[in-house]
Length: 297
Image (cartoon, rainbow, N blue to C red; front, side, top):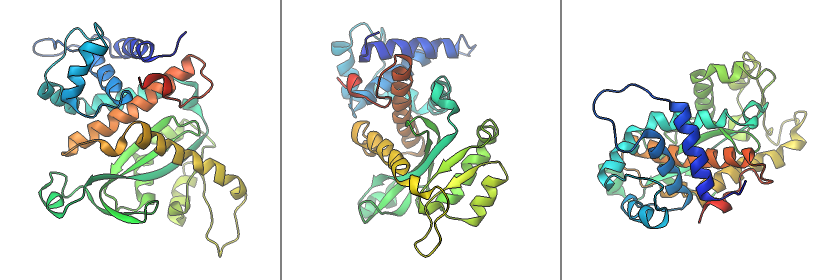
């Protein structure tokens, strides 16, 4: 099977359409189905077009016949925002449809999601009260926005994720994520989570141990290294490369969201695109699981 954007979009549409089935709904049947909406959203991210108005002008010329009906920019924006729960479900459905889903090793980390820079923006923004100031160690600077807490497999497949105010402790967010989806841990006996020094906590160790999970992270310099720490460095670089894929190729930092739902939908849109690419690469036997090169043109 050839690997290109059209093949991915066709396989994605068929899979989502089968997964959704024919669900009863009130009112008129939408001209753009949910399966078409999610496929359209994934294609937009993979092709790197941030403007929704420009994207809807691009589709008829470069993807003729792929989508029989296209809404206006306002309609597309509203449908995408309302589809946030559907985007989350689609990420889980595609991820669980791969052989990577049952991996017994997870990698956890967080990365900044900037939502504004000027002082007036932070005061007028609809995100005020959710977004806040945080410190980015990678760039040695403060930012205003959110943090994306991502848990994925070593191959980069997203398992679960959350957006949180940057001043919330990473350890607290990890525990909240595990409590929100307790079956994720229950289905994986002997699970190992690899993280960095930001997750050092006796409370977190106890919390995970009670659920049969082992947390492996570096020790402080004045502490005796724990068994297995010598293997941490190459594994921890995996989550950094996943964040680099999200930011460098899927433009995570250029989300353009201005509301709580808008930011959530655009972040989910990018995570779905990454998941769809990994899902398709595994299904077609590609040598590099997280490669997006075949789908960005």
